[in-house]
Image (cartoon, rainbow, N blue to C red):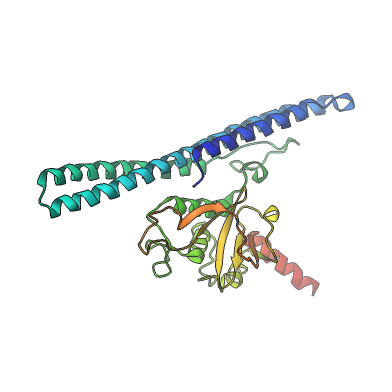
Length: 309
C-alpha cells in the first residue's frame, strides 16, 4: 500500500505547483495590467488557495489512513502470534500462560477495531472535499461542485475508485473465485463490477458478471470502449483496463491501479496484503479500456448517430 510519507511528499508537490501558478498570474505585465487583470489575479489567488487547502486536507487524511493501515497490519500479525501461543498453552494445560495470551488477544483485537474505524473515517474524510468556487471569468459554478481538473475526479468515477481502494485496504477481503461477491472475497472482475455498482452505475443489471461480458454490459450504461494497446500516459482515473476472459483492474491515477490479483494462501481474507491491492500499472496484454463518460452523454451520442443515418 502507498505510504503516508509518500502521500505527504505528493502534497508538497501540489503546493509547489499552486505557488508557481499564482506567481505566473502575478507576473503578467505591460498591456495586460488593468482592471481585468486585477479581477483575474484576485480570483486566481482565491481559487488556488481554496483548492490547495482542500487538496492538502484530503491528502493528509489519506496519509493518516495509510499510517493507520501499517499499524493495523502489525497488530494483526501480533494477534495471530498471540492466538497461536494461546492455543499452545491450552494444549499444555498451562492456565497462567493461556490467561496471559488471552489478555493479549483481547488487547490486540481492541486496537484493530479502533484502527479499522480510524482508517474508514480517514478515507471518508479524504473523499469529502467540496469547493464552492468561482470560475476565473467570474461566472459562478454550481454550489458544492468540485472542479474535476483541480481535484481529479468526482461523481461515479470517484465513488468507484474510493470503494475499490477501501476494499483493498481492508484485509478481511481477499481473492477468491468461489466467494467472489464480497462474501467475503472478490476476484478481479467482481471487484471492478462491484465498485461501479456501489457508485450507482447499474453494471450488474446490464449483465456484467465476469471479464468475458464486461465490455458488452458496461457499454450499455455509459462506458466507451477504447480498443488497442494501453499507454499509461493516455489513461484517465476510473478507466477499466480489460483483457476479456482473463483479467481486469481499475486505473486510479499517478501510474497506479487497484485490483484483485490472486489467492496467496487459500484462505479467506488477505493475510499478506497483496491479494487485493493498489499497485503500479503493468502490461497484462490489455486489449482495451472501458472509460465512463456518463449515461446521459452516451444516450445523446446514440441519438445523434440515429439522426445521421
